[in-house]
Length: 372
Image (cartoon, rainbow, N blue to C red; front, side, top):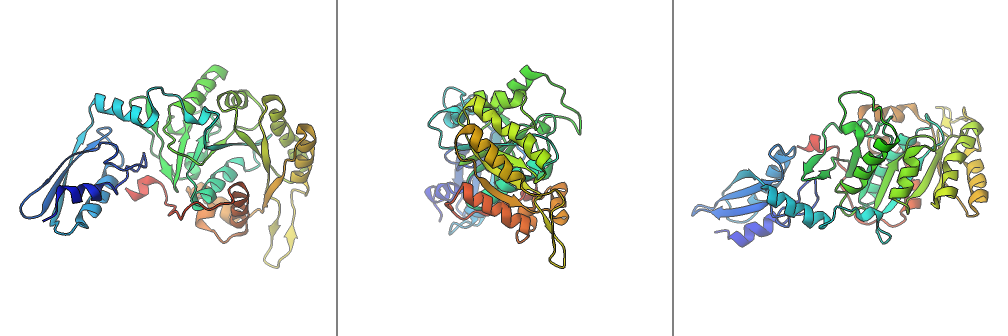
């Protein structure tokens, strides 16, 4: 006959899909009973009554417990945590003070603000695909969509669910192994966000302090174009964040991109590098075309290196390919849908430059709503 200890050991291998830690460690397993015929009944306490991933949690539990020798069946009795249990969980995950570890000087998380001087250079596409490429290298990755007025990250990753709220702590949805938060998760349809500076700052504070990011290796922040309130707020909230400047080869776009990178001279931030998007495209006969000119990234690198008195390298150049760029409209990054394409290979090279060491193999999956 299976023992309670064996069942508990099996359940220790089941992670909460939102938090990413074992359900036993999170005190979600209330009771385990086993009858004389090997039928197991597990009482599981969900964080909220309408937990969006209840089905996935149940399936994972059944799979784990059924694998224990002697188990003839598994029944799951779902309950809900009390207010006190949720408070204990929040303290367990975040500590007694709801202050983000991201803002601490000794934070192990590398934070990169992906910036551009103007819209239309593919900044959000670069952010999303770079995040997927980093996740495929085994890194724990998050995206904060700080482009409040022009949010697009959830749609590009196929995310339709909203964060789960535990006390005052937000559990961000996950897609392709990436934790994601965006103001787009809190507005109806395509409604515009009409906020002034103080409201923008407060929203960013919540994204930094009230979101459970877990133990991230890298957080990418998709910034709005330009050098406005959000750039200033994030420099205050996350002073150790570094800048990734996205430009196109066009000299006009490059000059505007220089302004976005020049913010580092005033905030004391470091420019980690320059990424050139839509650098060229190749036709079927092998002919290479450069419709937006050439030299934009090199010009930005040279200008910012001189201004900041430190080397600001060109991390990579991403070619243009309409077939794979359209993947973002379908909620699937081209690094995932067409990994052998030239743009995907270029993005993977940039990811390797930012994170040379591959941590561990990772199965990158689509959004949780698909798995559930």
